[in-house]
Image 1 (cartoon, rainbow, N blue to C red):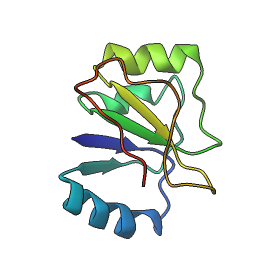
Image 2: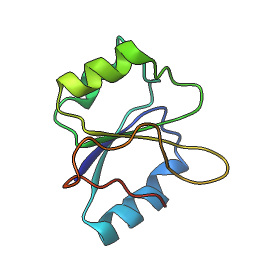
Image 3: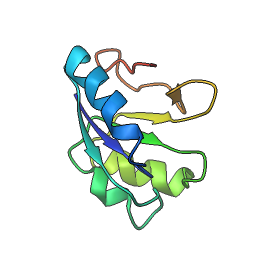
Length: 97
């Protein structure tokens, strides 16, 4: 599973890369925030991880879906990832760290 990780900070990478190796996931890290103009960066990814200041509105979700990005998660202070909308396919589970 490849995950597009938006609004990445330097301290995010080591822990997520470690977990990714343990869970057979890879990450594409982007320093930019997710919005309608940057959603195309997630093309080809299976999931997206966003921060609270990213824009995750209907237009962004539609664009992510257009590029076969099936799962959206959000970084938060209470947990590492939280689902934004249920996964459309039971064969594509999301994970919360």
